Amino acid sequence: IDLSRFIPTPASAELRASLGIPPELTVVGSAGRLDVVKGHDLLLEAARRVRDAGQDAAYLIVGEGVERANLERRARELNMADRIFFAGYQSDVARYVALMDVFVLPSRREGTPMALLEAMAMEKAAVATPVGGVPDIIVDGSNGLLLAGRSAESLADALLRLLPDPLLRQRLAAAAGE
Image (cartoon, rainbow, N blue to C red):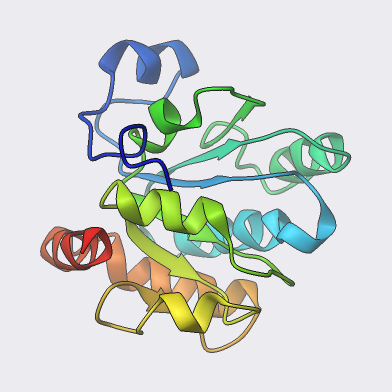
């Protein structure tokens, strides 16, 4: 990880406004290729569950891929299009990760996920599925939250634990940076 690029940085209010993300919302985000194996559909389903449980947030998805049209359609079907923001491919992904309060890696399959390591270097509270090398990176409850499984329900449960608790987010974020 290039620690000169992936450092804790204040979020850009201008970038946030250009994406249309309301300033009062906590931002949950993910960055990566939009492909079925990356599990962004799980994030969309979890977002709906979180909203239905009464917790409001914005969801930022950074990346491009073959699943983008399907994900955008699904966001509309879930009536979440006003809370799910697709930023597309970005050469300076760190600017977008800086906007995130919580970084989510909802992958169905992974090796050692660089996006997760980069977000943790930027001191983001992280939530991830227990696939590939992820359990070697995240110690559940210490430097992030490791999901019990690969489901929208377990991701929603983790988000419902993090979103209303800024102190927990801060503690996990600081430990992630370490």
